[in-house]
Every structure is written in structure tokens, then in C-alpha cells.
Length: 270
Image (cartoon, rainbow, N blue to C red; front, top):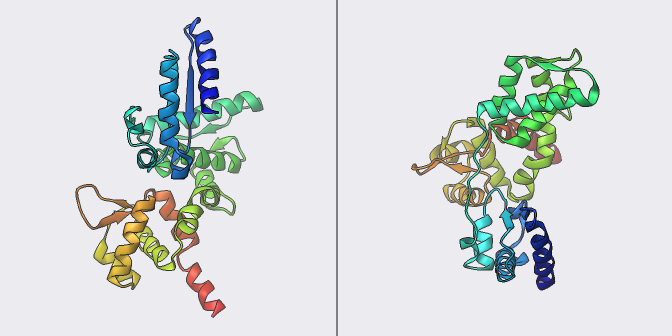
């Protein structure tokens, strides 16, 4: 099947090359693929076969949040040498605002009327999003849906963020619930996340986590190692023993929907 795929791609690429065209294959969310899928082996095999067939106008991109390099290397040791690594940083303030304004311009074309946004509301969406495109999209959409006078203001952003089925609920169901529940199967580990969330956006010392969580030292250490590996916590660069959550939105979601509520549920069940 892989040989056939390489043949077909090479044939199409050769035809497209006549008009200076080419093919680019994007493998998205590669961090979620188990090692057993052989991602590195696939990329290595495909690029070698295309090179032998002279298809030099075919590109392959492997995209993921974290752990992609390791998964590719586990599948084929030399696979990572094929690709050029490009680190994608969060969008800056101007780029975040441009995303919102482009969305409003597109909405105007489709709806036939203009919805404006004041500078304070635009700045708040920019700050809340921290430059993550999916956060920008959700905060802007929720504010847009909340607006009733075709002029998005801070109240629209805040209400769209906090109301039932608002932006935080949507982000929680889409991203945070998996990070908090599915990937963290220990109540103690979730307690560690709750403590860190209470200090967000600042970093929190390991000793503070131990003290405020009420957990044993080795339990907290095991939790931090596991959470770091899963990308649920971030370690301060160049300094040991200081942790924070990967985004302020994740911390806000935990504080809003998890802290205190799980304890009450446990007490009621008991």
C-alpha cells in the first residue's frame, strides 16, 4: 500500500511540476498518534520512495503540540533527521487582534451587517487567549454570540466567557476535561493541579504544593513528574521546583468548575 501511495503521489507530482506546482501533505495532531502507528517509519519510507522517483516537489509536515519528535524517533531512529523542526510560538498582540477583526469582516460579508468591537473588549480577548488560536476563536465567538447591539464590549466578552455553555464550558469540554480527567487518573494528581491553578498565572514552589495539597512529598513528586510528561504542567526554565499550568484559561477553568465541587460531591456520596 505504501509503495502504491508513493507511485500515485509521484505521478501526480510529476504532472503538477509542469506548472511549477507541487504537493504538501500535513499530518496534524501527530502528538495523539500512538507509537504503534509507525509515524516515523511512514515518513522515512515515503520520502525515500518519492526521492527515488524524482518527485522533489512533494513536502511532508508533521504537526503536534508535544512529544512528536519522541514518537517519530521511537518508530524510526533516523526519521527526525528528515524534517526541519519549526517551533510555532503563540501569536503576538497585533496578530491576535487581527484574527478577531478578520472574523468580524467575514461575518459582515455573510450576514449583511457590521458588528463592531471596542478596543477594550479586543484587548481583553487578546489577553485571555494568551495567543493560542483556538482560544481566540472561542472567546471571540462567545462574545459575538452574546452581543445584542452590534457593538461588542467588555461585558459581552466576560458574559460570553462565564455563562453556562459559554467559552470556558466549551473549551473545557473540548480540551481541558481530557487534560484534567482522561489523562490524569489519580485524585491526588488532580489535587496538585488544583493547587497550582490557585496560584496561576504565577509559578508555584514545590514545597508550597506539598503544604497546600496535604499530600505526602513522594506523592506530589510522582504527580509532578507524570503531569509534566503529559504536558499538564510547565516547569520554569532554568529553575527547579517551580511549576504552573500551560495556560491561564486551563487554570481559570479548574478554579471555576473543579475546585471545591469535587470535595462536596465526595462528601455527599459518603
